[in-house]
Length: 329
Ligand code: TYM
Image 1 (tube, helix red, strand yellow):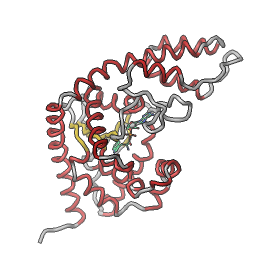
Image 2 (cartoon, helix red, strand yellow; image 1 turned 90 degrees about the horizontal axis):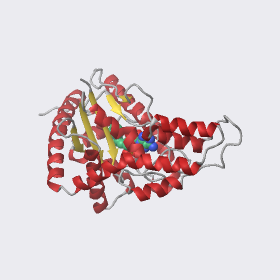
Image 3 (cartoon, helix red, strand yellow; image 1 turned 90 degrees about the vertical axis):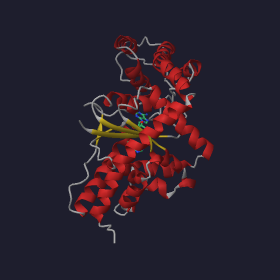
Image 4 (tube, helix red, strand yellow; image 1 turned 135 degrees about the vertical axis):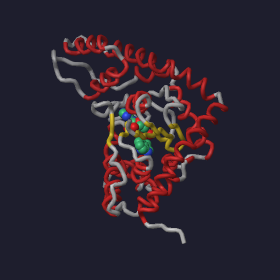
């Protein structure tokens, strides 16, 4: 049995990228591993939510975790800020994280480009907090989407550096994980890169069917193939990538053939895609509504998760303090 850790930022409703890149795998992994899954609300502070939004977002994501099938009896399901030991380990790891290497990470450079007016230190040290999240449970596997690969590489680096510095073999080097397959990247509907929470190009698990239809019908396409068997441009490939995770193989084959024969009608493809997405999201959406109205249940789940997560985190932090040399008089 391996120890698994992963989390999702509470910066808004979860989209298909979060579901297929991460959450669906959390649910599969909980069956055979010692799993810790959390809601990254400390991380969400880099974008300065109001107190009301902060709490509302955590509640929504918690309901979404549960609605997707996470079982709080099988895995430890908690809110990051309920485990302040994470903040202590983050502080300790920060002492061996170098500003140069943090500045060079792709996600930091991206954020600087997109929001030059809010380049805060939390953004810079984001990968350090993420490393603390993972190694605090000494996890070996981290189910994530492709966009988190570099952060995982940093987590391994910080774990290794700690071990080398104190000449111990204490932290495990965590590996990104997706059941032996390549990590997934679900594209957005605007034809530009990945589906994201702030990009306005996503389909949310909580979207109503009508909204999903509208979004998918508006997805970017081109004017269609003019030669048989011509290669697919990225915007069209993107729609097929989403189809790959929601549709039957026969449906995918049908539209691929239509494309190859220059007979494709994008309207038909989108209609089918919307229908198949709705099939996945509708039962989840209904469960989200159900669960989020049950405050007693949410309270019970978070209390139980916080206790279990803190036990594991406190043990690590105590051992780390010993290794570093903090001693009582
Ligand atoms: P976040 O909240 O942006 O995304 C949560 C998870 O969803 C995956 N994901 C995607 N996968 C495929 N295609 C997409 N378009 C897509 N968009 C998002 C992400 O890869 C991720 O697995 N830093 C993390 C949260 C975090 C974390 C951690 C994760 C904090 N501490 C420790 C693992 C372990 C983040 O911002 O993910």
